[in-house]
Image (cartoon, rainbow, N blue to C red; front, top):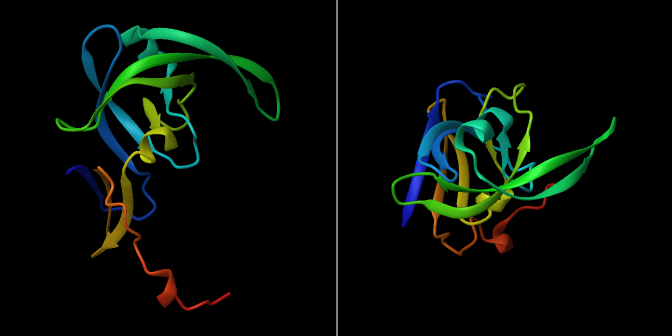
Length: 146
């Protein structure tokens, strides 16, 4: 089993870590935000220019204000020495407001176990692969409070 763990002393801090990504050339370290609200992993335009990945296709994005095209690229994502995903399709996006280089979406998160917890006022998250394939809790022992 392989895993990564990140710790934060500030409650409410975004779930961030440093990972390595690469295109046609070598790998480089980037700041990543882990966000279950995105189906696909997003990569900033600045990083696209640096790693020059293979563009696979284009897609149309519909937001509340406009419709625009976004490119789909194929990259390698290395979360640790032991966890690397090759040929991951990522979408370019403006991530300047998030102050990160890449957003790890559910396309990666769903491949393993993703856990967030608070211990002694330190927030930590862990990503483990392969997943344990067992429930976190037994649904027969849960009190229904709704």
